[in-house]
Length: 541
Picture (cartoon, rainbow, N blue to C red):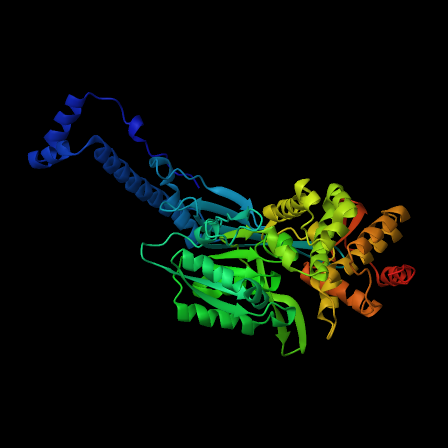
């Protein structure tokens, strides 16, 4: 189709201001001419451009009507094409709308897509036409000839595409050791947002264990700031990570009447942060919340990313699925005070090291060296060893872990890329944690999974036995389990099947190729798992 070029303002010709005024005045009443002269040059130019645009559209329509009436076509033109022709004339005549049509190929159907930005929202909204062509060939053989008939079917459709990038930004703040609840430290109050003068209430979701240990300090902090704090206490165990816990928070938020842009606090371990994040995502379709992790595991894991979720009990299969229901919903801020670690027992601190060691194995030999040399001392002293604190070892381990997690998650927050090294230790551990009555914590299950994958790496020739033994010794020094009686062939093979479902058609199981390096594989067989399980029995777990 040919569209006649409409001359722009600059191509009409150059004339003196006087000659234009004389010609204009001779063709219109004096009152109209005087009104025209009273308008600013910018307004007059805009009116001229608008008039030219209308003329252009009318010209195109006239030419199209003539073309269609005189030229027969196999396919009739769609209304979407008409829509685009009318809109495409707007682009060149307005500085505010200089969008140029873009052409792309649909990755699913192969259709040709023409995108044209709309005038009022050219960065976000695009009108489109899709043209899909399919050729079908039919071969008919007769005694005298072979006839091939090719049919081409062309279909068109139209619509709009809305494009919007979520402005995700949140600070992970390191708080000076042991100062989070100090009255002189304003970080906790500042994180709850800026409010009108006289608005002196806040809301916090607090872990049951944290309430027992720090409840008085938390209330005292806000009382000193002149704030009336409403506290919703929830249990922080894995068994409590259910929809009922989310409902409890939602009920209390309704009673409190949380404002649409008012951040609430979530103070506790990983389960409480997950539950509170889920509630924040749902309440009024999303309200801000602040994470305050109180365990080593939560400090290096749950507090860093944007995932929230709960375990789901399915009425159809009568099974419970770990983190099956959840959301990608970022906190407004995170406040990390490592002093909380001192309130944990050795097993819980070791549990946190399960996630830290995972990161070391797939991403950082430096972090592994630190764990190998100082991990046991940090567990024994609950991260309070003065020499290691002075030397910066304690903070270095936490800082490295958080930075590695952010480096891996930051460019892939919505997990559009499913080959993720941070999924190391998260293939077989899910089912290990969900075995009824199993006494195993998340970081412990991750480590059992992690060592099983170390054995798989060895059997594939990725690493040598010296590396296997070194990793095994480090895990034992961190008081982490390296095997489980529940890790049997049926569970391991079902875990691979679940991975295929969760990771969109492929296993994508991370295996290490050396300490600090990894690769994702998707071809692990049942026989391979059986050999690895046999080899697991040869270690002194």
